[in-house]
Image (cartoon, rainbow, N blue to C red; front, top):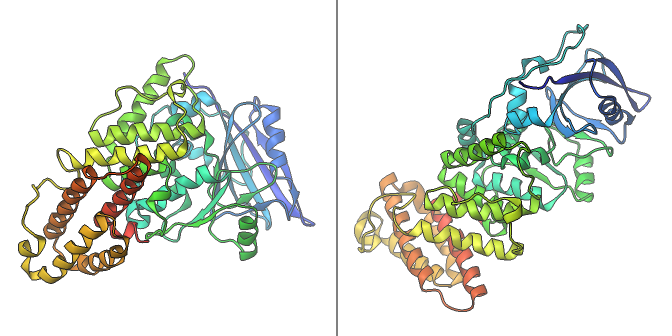
Length: 445
C-alpha cells in the first residue's frame, strides 16, 4: 500500500524589503525539520530571494528528512504575497511514479491553489502508476525546438551546477517533463528544478525555467557562471561537443525511437520493484557509460545484453567515451537495414538519376566527396548547395540523396587510416556531416 504524503501550506510576504514566511496549515505528521527548511527557503532579504510565477511555479528539491519537496508557488490575493503548497514525497512514493515528479504533479489535482480559507490539511494517497514516455509531447518539442537544442540543455547538466533556460514557443514545465523522460530512473531525483525563476542562496536548483527576467539579473547569473539558455529551433551548437549521454539523446530524438527508451526504463522500474533496496544509485558522471551502452544497443535494434550498473562502470576517460560513442553510432547505421530509408542505393550518379537538378547535384556530389575525404575547404560550399536545394526536392528525391550520402559515408569510414586518435576525430566529423544531410537546420555551424 502506498505511503501517505504529508502536506505543508506556507505564505511568504514582502515587507520592508524582506520576505517573511509563516505557516498557514500542515498535516499532523509533517516532519518538523522539513517545515523549518521550507520556512527558511522563503524567508530572507529581497535582494537574496527572488520569486517569479507565471501563473505558478512548480519546484522539486530534497528535504532534511529524506522526503522530496514537490511544491507549488502561486500569487496570493494580497500584493507582494505568495502561497506555497508543498507535498512531502517519500522516496518510495516517488519511485512508484518512476521518479518523475512532474508526472506525479499532473496526477494530483489537490495541488491546485486552495480556497482563501483552507480546511485542515489531510495526508494524500497518490496513485501508483509508472508513467510511459510522453511521445506526443516529445514530438511537439522536437518540432518546436529541435533535437540539438534539447541535447545541449542536457549537456548543461554536466557542465554547470545550475542552468537557467527559457523558450518563447513551449512552456518550461513541458521542457522539464521531457527531460525527466530522457533520464534513467535512478538519476531523476538528482534533477532538482523550479519551473520559473526561484533564487535563494539557501538552496539551488539544477534547472530553472524563467519567463521574464531583468537584464541585470541575467548578467548577474552569467557572472556567477550560471548558463542562461534560450531554447529555440536552430541551435548553433555542434554535436561534436556533446558528451556520450547527450549524444545518445540526440540520436534517439533524431530517430524518434521512443519505444526503445520505454522498454529500457520499464526494465529499470521492474528491477527496482523486485529488489528490497530499490534502484541501485549511479554516480552522475557514470551516466556517460550508460549512454555508450544504450547508443550501441539502440542502433543494433535491441536492448543491451546486460544493463549497466554502478559496479560495472569502467574507468574510461570522458574523451575516450566521446570517441567510442561516435564510432559505436556509425557502424550499425551503415550496415544492414537503413534506419532512415529502405530503398537500395543506386550506383548511378545523382545528376543522371535526377536530371532536373543535374547541375546542382553534380556540384553537390563533388563537394560531398571532397568533404568526406578530408577537404575542409569544400564543406561551406557543400552546406550552401544542400541548404538551397533542399526546399525544392520532393520527399522521395530527398531520401534517395540522403541514402547515397549514407552509402558514401560507409565507404569513407572503412577506408580511414592513420592513428587511432586521428581516425576517431575524422569519424566524429563524418558523423556530424552525415547528420547535416539528414537535418540541416539541426546542425548549422
